[in-house]
Length: 464
Image (cartoon, rainbow, N blue to C red; front, side, top):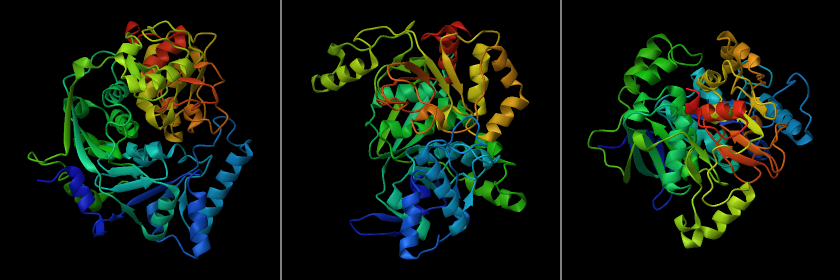
């Protein structure tokens, strides 16, 4: 019996080139303003149209400011990229959720919440965190700009078929342990290259128990283990999440889609190229200490010592620690921090804001902490308001910003200054990722909230 990955992949094969790549049909292409201009220009130079514009959805997200969005973007490069996306979508007849419209947001938040990302689909975008959509039971992965052009022109892409891996996490997660902690734990176990060449299916009791928002967070971080993508087999939780969303099938189309979606699972005798299994009891609230997402520890743990590190990796390990200002063997609990960022396509959903609010309710933000709380979409912003979370946060000294990628990456106004520490719910902690010289500590919304009110790295379980 084939794996679910095989089932979805094989039903989308147009042709296979002997000793070469597969021509794969793509159901949905997402485009944002950063990786699409050259792709559209390539079509223009070749005199081509978008082959199936109804299957392409675009929105600006990386460059947009998270305040005063009714005013022009101040950065000239960012403004030009956004203006260029507007013009390209108009010229080629492609749907765009423009800046300052209620459907705009981060592309990997908007796709699932509008019902555009569905089980059994192949989904691509010129963005590495496209694997997020795998939580819907889709085969979703990031592609390069030349490949974006290929999909625009033909609705197909040339790809080598990845190998399959199943990661099972069993048991029950402990108090204060979230999907983000599960992902950070997996990255520390596999390292940032441990899943290279594989497409990962997440399974086991922990994954089945996760909310859809939790699964979206888990799948979002697949790329950080080196995987081509990651996904979760759709189940009743998935179907309930999709039902009634704007672009989801309706009526008879829903019944037909649902019948198909219920067949989307790996067989009991499915053979994976690699199988890994982990226990929920081993996973604590976590933080990173280095400059890649695999360099992580339990929140009450210690930075590894040189004796824990392979000799050929010691130089890069020390380079990371020097950049971060940490020492081998150091405990990070109680370490002063300067910024907190809640948001990104990793943790910018309503559940993340509920979690953050649950910790800070009745507390006060530390005076010397700058906190950026950025919804992943205007729909999330509306939910925050409808549930009164904005008022609870306001009383605790926090303000909600306008949707966008924000401080996940240094492509807009929200930059962390050099040398300062940021506890961030985003997906990458590379050198300078949040601003030149910035120091990023990746964490869950609960850990971020605890840091925001204490002004230092704090175990969120003390507030639960």
